[in-house]
Image (tube, rainbow, N blue to C red; front, side, top):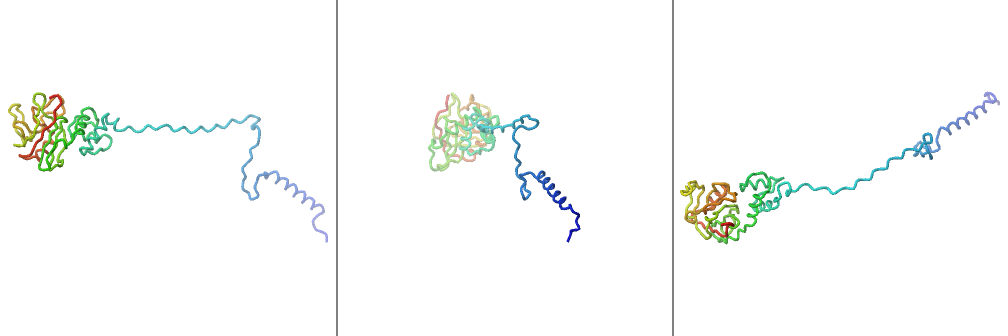
Length: 263
């Protein structure tokens, strides 16, 4: 049975199939995967772009060698060259270190070291060192009763009760040259909220006498002026004068020992 397709049509079909196959071979690169996944392109060798050599790719910069990091400034620099000494004294007297220089400022305020700037200068260091040098056992206080101790060498004072520290140590100022506070063991013989000094015509707040006209009282001038001194009395900061006045009664013991430099 003859086909109804015209003669020669099979040849034309085959030729078209071959031509189509050729076109596909040209259009489909050799690297195209069978499932349609793209393979990485292979770069053409040799110069490109009209024979010019390609610009070299910039080589990656080497990672910089980490340099030693400068540590943040410590209290030694930011709060004065004597900050470490002052912080040790703060620990001894129970003043928290705080942040930045707040602790040193609190130390200055507690002991009236002016200005209250948080910088550990010579005056602040001097007070701190005196407190650190103070050994409350040097007083030899009895295991019983209340004893006020005065260390002339370190210019410090404190109160013991039944052999234990009750107040201090804190700073004081005793007799200057020619008016040195005498050493010895005494007894508080009288106390009053304020007494008038006839020789020097000044009120003496929180007065407690223990050796005739010598006694404890609140200072009437700046305590840390090294050029000054008392006329034999034991000068106290107001806070300490109030505390000592409340702690000591008539009949309590006072022990004065050591030697104030320059007297």
